[in-house]
Amino acid sequence: MHTSLLLEMAAGAFPERVAIGPLAGGLTYEELSLRAKAAAGWLCGFTGDKVVFVGTNGWALPAAIMASALCDRPFTPLNYRLADPDLRKLLSRTAPSVAVVDDDMLPRLKGVEGVTLLARSDFEAACLEPARRAAELDFVDPDIAVLLFTSGTTGEPKAAVLRHRHLTSYVISSVEFMGSEENEAALVSVPPYHIAGISAVLSGIYSGRRIVYLAAFTPEEWVDAAAAEQITHAMVVPTMLGRILDVLEARGEGLPALRALSYGGGRMPEAVIARALKLLPHVDFVNAYGLTETSSTISVLGPDDHREALSSEDPDVRRRLGSVGRPLPALELEIRDPDGNVVAPGVSGEVYVRGEQVAGEYLHKKAIQSDGWFATNDGGWLDEAGYLFVEGRLDDVIVRGGENISPGEIEDVLRQHPGIADVAVLGVPDDQWGERVAAVIVARGEAPSVADLSALVKSQLRSTKTPETWEFRAELPYNETGKLLRRVLKQELSRTGVPAA
Amino acid sequence: MEFKPGSRLKSSVCSAEVVVVRPPTGDIVLECGGHPVTPIAEAAPEGLALSADHQGGVAAGKRYVDAESGLELLCSKAGQGSLTANGRPLTLKEAKPLPSSD
Image 1 (tube, each protein chain N blue to C red):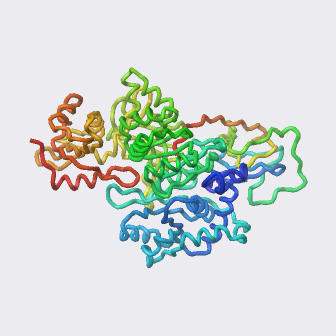
Image 2 (cartoon, each protein chain N blue to C red):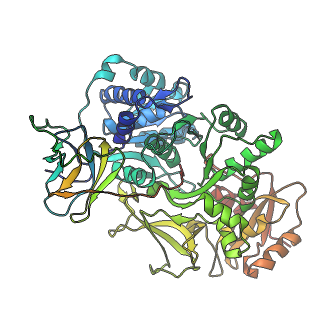
Image 3 (spheres, each protein chain N blue to C red):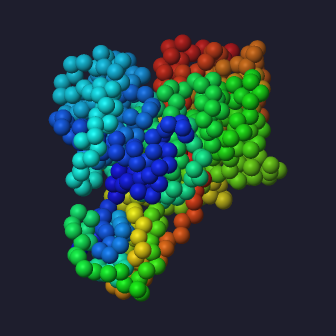
């Protein structure tokens, strides 16, 4: 099934409903559909087998996603925040292509061989040309819908392949067609080159929920837009949520229209989500776990799970606040040991997933097994009730003297300390043990003592898991979608780390 | 008629359109409103009328299944006719909505 059919269906069923932008003066589904059609006709006139998008959020994004689908050219959004040489290098990997580029970014990209640059303003103008809007397009057989360069927190970015069938399977199995009420609106602040930016468009259109874009995230603008646009739904990454809560607290604002807030894309500190539940008691919280390679969400911790966990006396139920919930019903999920055997509940291993939304493919390289199972490279475990706890990338596991140590559990313990605002645990090279455990701390106020912190970890975990290197910093390095850049910390600490006395 | 995932078909007698989500095992005759459906890009045969026995209707966004052949369809445009596979009425696939995560 073709992703453009999602918009065709929405435009057929609710042509007059506002799809994108403000309730007064936003684009209706019919208008978005006409613009996508006109843009498809225009784009087809240029040579190139992909449609690259380099720009910020706005109505041109859904129009370009749908136009790419209609002319059967993979939609390939690039991270415009990359340094010019990196961005140009990625762009050259898309050749032969046409690239729709924000006007002010055009000078950065001139002269890349095999790429036809088109100004976003020209793209938007083409969407309004009457003759193109009236033209009939041929039916095309769908294939690759989206190419997404993975964020590359380690090594060279890989181009993940998402076919139309993966994305539409995800949407039709997880979203009710036009299931939203007319006054619902989603605030989208994730960037276009992130899987969440793509799934926000597809799910939003299919559910009939108006999309309001934030061109780029700041917590103040997010809160302003949420209040002004009567936002009912939003998706944020953990670092965004903490900053949004700070603004709400400082202003004493409560966002009464907000009904549901979903979060994902990284580990959510339990203290932050507990604070969010307290500050916004009327809001349904949803924790979603997914990967680019799985067309977005594969596991969900729903609103009732959150409330049950928060109010439970049972530590096994309470700890589910730190889980990513249960796998979507349309999927299979297993935890396997390094030999490929499925392990029992409570035992850590690698998360494997299988289902129609799972692409598990990169350009020129299939990563999915012939039986359909995809190894996520995430470590995790399931509890007795089937709740999934994700421990982080297997690449991040610390191997100290042959013992595998997961940074996440040490970070969780350290976060309990009131003097810690943020923390990253990682392995640094060690002559004796191969790797030793290092902790990088961002203090809240006065820095806690290393002796205190060591005692805290020792009181809850095996002594080998107590960090041997401690460093205090003003902040940790994150990429703009909230992923901790452990690679950067690791490089820095490998040079400068000072062992604890 | 081709039933592969993503194939689009339309009713020959009403406004209904469907897309194949899961193809059937083996050959089937898919009808809507009592008459075989037509591939979306082709012209429907003329002069046919909606059968009185097949007017249950289909709703956009709903999925319909034939348990025997494994066929699963998504209705992409509503219509007055109802669907059958080899004469067996297709049944509505109930789906529990998930909390919104995007």
